Length: 135
Image: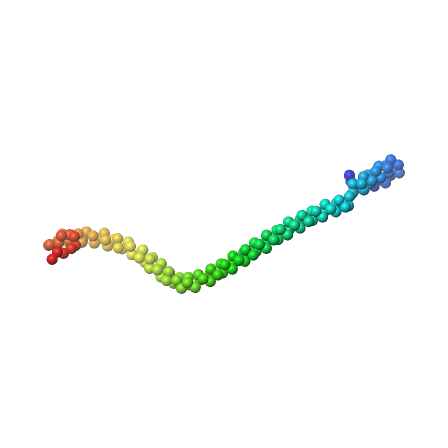
């Protein structure tokens, strides 16, 4: 029902009676106490939900603060030893890289010198080829 159709300006008595009947129906359906109680229930339920959410938020913030505090303590315990060891680790890594660069040279030398060493063992008199001298 539209509000504009409730108040009809008319000279006819039946239109006036219909308008009064609609107004009476509207007033009869309006229950301010019931409506107020329903609104109060909705507000209480909503505020309970908000309070529960805020409680969870506070718990999460407390947990996060404890975690950050713990991380700070761990970093305090680890930072100084790491700063001390870091230059040595860098030098060791550099040395390992240089050894890795030398490995192809060692392989090539072994490939070339291996047959030469075998030839020398057979060429030397009294050599048994095992590399041990009996004497």
